[in-house]
Length: 261
Image: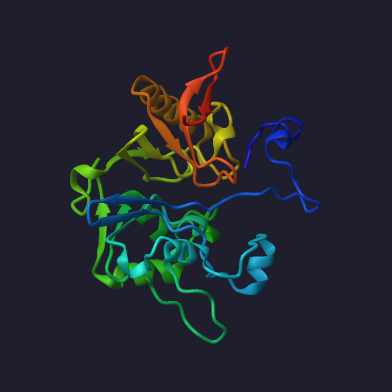
């Protein structure tokens, strides 16, 4: 998760357990636009079989996102649009019903349009050996068969119109979509794996999973400079403690996530 950052540095941000694992979230963002509800990503869900759940240290056996939607008086059937930044399993596994022995997967969110970047979709259809294990073949097949899949090639989608502006990134995986919406805190960008958590606000910090770390650093710097000029915020999908931070700099000029007032 921290690329070539020395362990002596990153373990202060993310203390590892006895197995060398760190705590991470798989956080989704729900946006209400009048009567329309837009969900940015679906987290890892509960699609893993028990052996894989144990291997990746997934603590909860239940589909946490569905429980959280219920706490807001909603079900997955109430979602109108699901935006998937890319199709790696920790961001899109929640699209699937929980694992059941001797049963196949089904697609959740039956009333939603599914928005995916065209390049991210192409990557999922023809993955590189380096990240092939990060994709779920059954998910891609179900999305394609749904008739509700929209592939985005520009900065907006037909399903979302002016509600969402997309920033595209290729440093982590081709065609990753970072959706920007207006919020009470100013412009808010769901940064996905471009900036997975508050420690990654420091521009040189990247992940070993990133395909082109130098490109990702350049993309991240441009986004943060833009958001800083507009008093914008970043939504973190993988940070276990911080959900949203305003883009700011410390006394040395390094970007950081400032707590919202």
